[in-house]
Length: 282
Image (cartoon, rainbow, N blue to C red; front, top):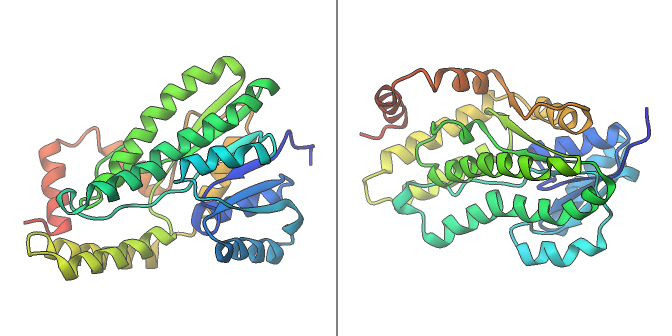
C-alpha cells in the first residue's frame, strides 16, 4: 500500500457513514481523525477501531462542529489534513411551521455552515501543499424534495450542493478537489432519530399534521429495518479521496439513482400528489 499524502478528518464519526468511513480509511492505512460530541461517543469510536485492529490510526476528537467558534479555536492544535469529509448532519424534523427559528438555525448551522467552516480551516494547509480533497456528504435530499416534514433538512442539503459547486470552482486553482457524495436511504441513526422525533411531534401536534407524523414514524421504522448498511457509502467516500480524478458527484444506492433519474421527468404536480398521499398530508 502506497504512503498516504496526509491525515484525514471525518466529522460525525461515532455512527453511520462517519464511523464506517473512519474504519475504512484506517483499514487502508490513512491516519484518521473523527469528530464526536462527547467522551462517551469517543469511546464508541475507539472501541470500534480496536475491534477492527486499527486503533493506532484512529484519533477521536471531541468537538461539536455546530459550534463554529470552537472549530476555529481547535484547528491550530490539529494536523495538516490532506482531506476533510464533512459528514456530520441531522434533520430538524417537522412541518415548516412546527420547527422554531432556533431549531432551523441549529440544523443549518450543523448541516450547511459547519462544512464551510471546517473546509475554510483546512484550506490554508491544502493550498500550501498544492493538493487536497474536500468531501461533502449531501443526500438525494439535496437533489429532490421527496421528504415532507423534512423541509429544513432538504434546505440544508440543497444549500450544501450549491456551496460545494461554488467552492469547487474557487479552490481548483490550488490543486484542491471538492467532491459531493449523495446517498439514498441507508441504515443510520437518522432513521432512529426520525422515528423518535416523529413520535414526539405527533404527541403534541394540534391535529393539522398528526396523521403525517404518525405515517412518518411508521415509514422510518420500515426504512430502518430494510435499508442496507452504510458500507457502500463508506467505500464511495474513500474512493472520493483516493481517486486521482474523482467525479464531481457520486450518487450512492439504487433508490438515489432512481430518484435522480425520475425527478426531472415527472411533472411537479404529479410528484406532489404522490408524496402527499404517501405522507398522509390530506
